[in-house]
Length: 317
Image (cartoon, rainbow, N blue to C red):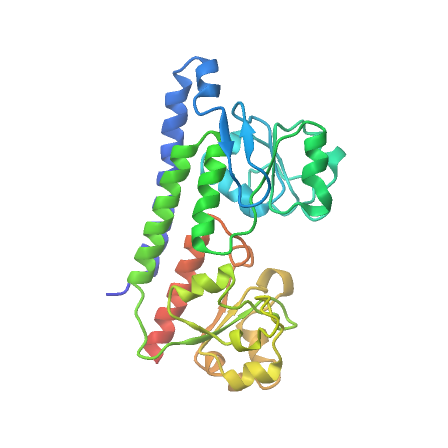
């Protein structure tokens, strides 16, 4: 039996709410301890990130600067939001995150240090920013973009340990796994594998099965029409209109809704696209650009959107 859309959403909300509730309970328990005990409960801790050298934190960081939208979402989801003093200009979730004009793409040491952080979280070591910050006695943790779901769970737990919320992070990762498994298990399987096209922008760049987003689609047994076009094995080939039309995907997922104003109507208006099965059958799916480009706890929401589309397309197949 398929999982109704409302129930899927409810599962997601309960998962994240439950994780945050656990974080709140843990914080209340810590509040009953003397301040020194609260601050040092899980510290010192040595972290081994996927990139960079092992990092030792002697005490819980209480002034965190995050220069990655995905990592910002995770930091808040594990219950460490009150420790964040500044986030970059792309970190728009949650809404109460202290968004600034700091940039993760062109990081500025002086601007970052101006917030007096005791931990700076990056997704990339752009322009040697990690060494520059370390030189002025700032702790730096690099949490790169997840390539797989296992990478995502590992990054959640790493940020939990870094912020003093290890148990909350472990609980959150477990709930994410369980929710994804539930969504996938309850999504109807079509008689024949469905094909799909994931659009990154209006110049037809796409993402293959080897990317993080491609692996999320892979949970549902979908076949990616971009895979044969990935001649340089970079994971993000630019497709031709001819290839898309010839492939005739069953599903079209648009990750260029906010950035480029795309929707089912604009796709149908493209020359020749009205002949595609996905267009004729109403299987052009407008995604939230942010959900489709970030690795973090809201991947469960993305999976719910994909599940709904797969269920609809399966019923018509």
